[in-house]
Length: 366
Ligand code: PMV
Image 1 (cartoon, protein in one colour):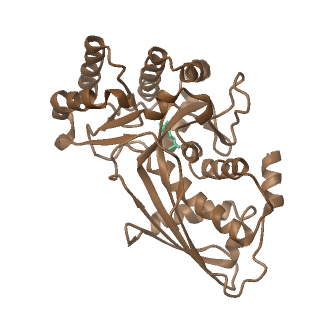
Image 2 (cartoon, rainbow, N blue to C red):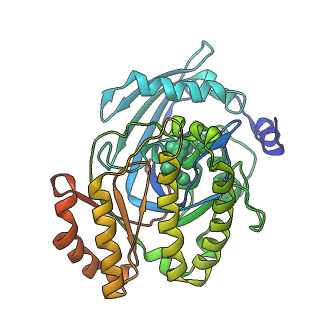
């Protein structure tokens, strides 16, 4: 189904008029994000079955550059390098995405692309690299498009377009283009929310959330055993799917209001419920899968005891893996880091943890 936005983006599509000597380079960094209300289950072309809200990270980001040179023959032509090494398999994934979206970016027919990418965070560390890498790629594409010359558009329209195409590349990437926090997916009571793109929450949240840290305990660095693609599709026959989608809708609205007010108690309650529901869905799908490890559960218990004893508003969330993301305001940084060092590192693989915090969203490097 072609929506109004599809039609708008088709109308904006540009060719390069003066192809001779149309060469250049663009480079962007874009962050990963951590979902608080989780997106799990999708339909059609990357449309979510429920709304989700995430915090945009900062240190965990991808840097992508595209060097483009004019060519005569039509069709997508690209070389992809990751960490300086040619990676044809990942290149194929990008190529597929570009072919699927040629109607929107017809100028890609006229260019050869050399795409180079690197992550600032280790592979398989429980940080979503598809969110950062795909949003970085899309920021580069839109920048090339701007160089060719599209009509005037506001920053908001630009980011909405970036979110729309990031979503098509990888669902959760839609949320990475906005600073601090964003919401993706239609929610009846949140004006402006959409399944097609995420919306910024920067101006809707209490300042305390702009100081939040995400300390990631690497319980295991092993690659997850289930891809998010098959995880999403298992929701189709999950007996709890209907209940989950209405819970997620409810949690989205409650979280939205809690973040507006700076209500940390509700934030903590929703964050932990959502993390555990995500994993409960995995455990109740057919086939079922368990990504949590004994050390994840031990660490969760220790975090809850610490919160109970100290009243420090520390809580955890989980992505599709065993690693624990610890969320807390900057005011408690010293106490929480000391607590991690003394009580939790023993449950991490090789005592590893990653220090991150919420950040500003994508930025242009070149
Ligand atoms: O964007 P995907 O298809 O990799 O799915 C992401 C799913 C979770 O990370 C588990 C949750 C989320 O909302 O980010």
